[in-house]
Amino acid sequence: MPLHIETPLIESRPLGLASGRTVLLKLDALQPAGSFKIRGIGAACEVHASRGARRFVSSSGGNAGIAVAHAGRRLAIPVTVVVPESTTARARQLIAQEGADLVVHGESWQEANEHALAMVGETDAFLHPFDDPLLWPGHATMIDEAARQGPRPDAVVLSVGGGGLLCGVVEGLRRNGWADVPIVAVETEGAASLQTSMRAGRRVALAAITSIATSLGAKQVCEQAFRHANERPIVTTTVTDAAAVKACLRFVDDHRLVVEPACGAALALAYDRAEVLAAHDCVLVIVCGGATATVAQLEAWATSLA
Ligand SMILES: *Cc1c(COP(=O)(O)O)cnc(C)c1O
Image 1: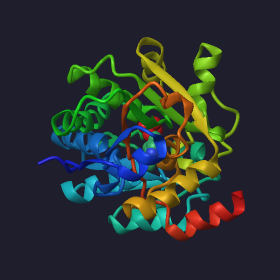
Image 2: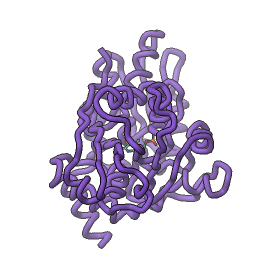
Image 3: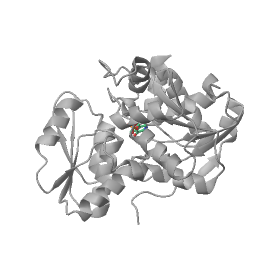
Image 4: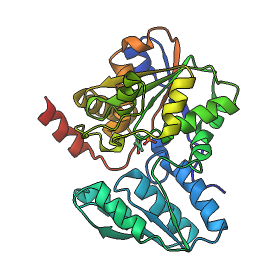
């Protein structure tokens, strides 16, 4: 039994009407632990467990850390998550409620990550949030399911942080005979590491992340994601934080699901009838989810960004 669940694929009438085309939603917000991350991280944790790992170590204060904590609890393997001081109380609580040891260290993720790497012993496994080939076949299972559940889409819309989701979806499309289905890769304006790299023609590290969509806040996409983006049909685009938050709040009313702005970024393209979708009659939107946002937080962001 894998640690992730098969999630529903539904046609969204509200998003379809807003965007003027057929919109299919892959509802990975329904995963245990609240995001698609458990697909790849769950699979990777099972591999490490079968190789005899005695502890899982993560440095993610977001959905990856929550997924590692969840996987460890289910596999009865202790988990240590090192997070920076900037990690919200809500994220800390979600990690702690999965039973993981939470270590708070350093001002930024870099410092927390160095601390985590330094504590990885011989019998420990370190779980990277996006840059690990062990993760991507797990993420690809969402496309295996979509291929069984619905029609071939004309495009797949997904959000990009470090590019692990992108690598998984590319692998899933390829192994289901959908390699030529274009991907529309969405980032928020202050976290556009993929778009910046595509425009520069090389993998660029952003100086800073200035978006509230912290789950998209990798300063640099992984090499494999950049390679895929150069080798297959893909369009990169951005939305504002305000548009992403507004999409989350509309989604609460339309589909009764709370997701992070990281996911709202992908939804915003459909809600705002983005020009990049014009050529596609039927789009599959990956509803990647995210557990760290609350309705109150989304409303506070909407007010402060207005
Ligand atoms: C991690 C995450 C992303 C981005 O995934 P990457 O693999 O880093 O590109 C998007 N949305 C949510 C909710 C996430 O947790």
